[in-house]
Image (cartoon, rainbow, N blue to C red; front, side, top):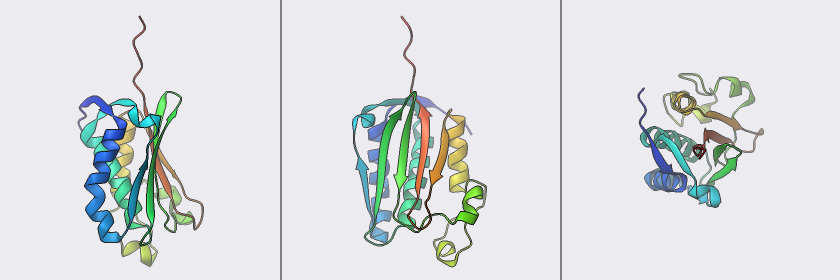
Amino acid sequence: MRFHKEALVLGDLIDNAIISSQGYAQQYGVHVEFEKNSAARLTLSADKNRLNQVLLNLISNAIKYSPTEGRVLITAERNGPMVRVSVSDQGEGVPVNFQSQIFSHFSQADASNTREKGGTGLGLAISKEIIERQGGVIGFSSPEGAGATFYFELPLPTLPVA
């Protein structure tokens, strides 16, 4: 996997991913929102196409597992030398017995309502590799029955010392 890092404005990247996801969101009757704040203006040094791939995967998963008329919320916040982007849904959450293997290749929860959603079970594994190869981390939280929040953190560029 090759990476071409460039300066990217975080909010622009998220806005473009949301626009790309609108047809899918309409198909499921789900609203996707970006809660903009000062972190949206932060500039990252990252591979645009790969980071877009991660965002689209997290957003499409959140749409897929949200109830009709549900909301997917995307937030960004500075976390010390990192920026964290979170994608939250209002679905049933990740089953506890599946949480330890969620970033493994070909992993999908076996519950019938999860299997019927489709997919290859590769999206989160690929997203993990993309984020880690760019110096970041990826994770999630999913309180039982209360939706899921998937997030990634990437380092902010350091300014040269004069």
